[in-house]
Length: 191
Ligand code: MN
Image 1 (cartoon, protein in one colour):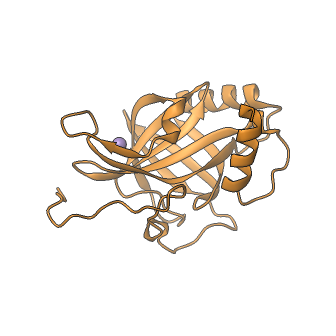
Image 2 (cartoon, rainbow, N blue to C red):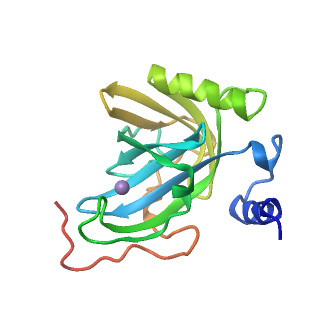
């Protein structure tokens, strides 16, 4: 089976909504990895120019437009990291367990003709410290903004739209790939 055939199948399973507009190759991906490290956090990653722009969100994303979630920008990750789920051994950077809490495709909030134009616009928004985008995930859907406050500190805020909800989306705690939850050991640190 060719890679493109594989991708088509996989994308069909992962994206519940019908695919309008861009062909598969033109899709930008996002992933949110729930990471039980020294402190539990959610790694929020957006594909941009072949890399994953990355933020660590201590409380996780919210679907409530009234919530402002601190998102600390961390180093870019390689594109393939979006597929990582598993355990980073003790003594290594980011030691702990990672699950793919959500994933899907995303687009800038405004319309651009094709992937290159979308990525250039997104990269400019990132440089300007204000990114507006629409997520098409399993859990996260609709428009969001990421706004830089100071240095690496950004805020992730849900935009008011038909997907907005006061329901705590983090209660849906399983991996969208393996359906595993993070292990909660009695001795795990909460500091
Ligand atoms: Mn992490």
